[in-house]
Length: 87
Image (cartoon, rainbow, N blue to C red; front, side, top):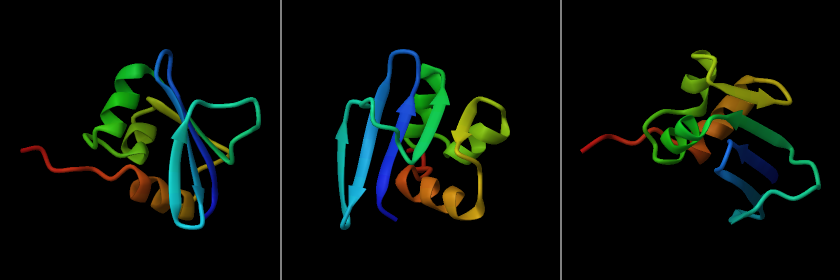
C-alpha cells in the first residue's frame, strides 16, 4: 500500500506517508489523506504506544475511520499500529 494516513486528535495530529516501502511522518496538510483516523488524544496515544489497535478503538466507538472500514484497511492499520506487549 502507498498513500497518506492522518491521525487526527484534539492536540495530537500527524500524517504518515508511505511510498516505496519508506514511511515518513509530518504534520497533516491541506491535501486530503487516503485514510483518516479521528479520535481523542488519549485514544491516539494508546494507538501510537501500541496499547490497543485502531480496530479495537473503532469497535469501542472511540475512533472514526474514513473512508470506510474494510478487511484490507484493518490489516493495514494493524500493521502500521500493532498492539505491543506490556512489559
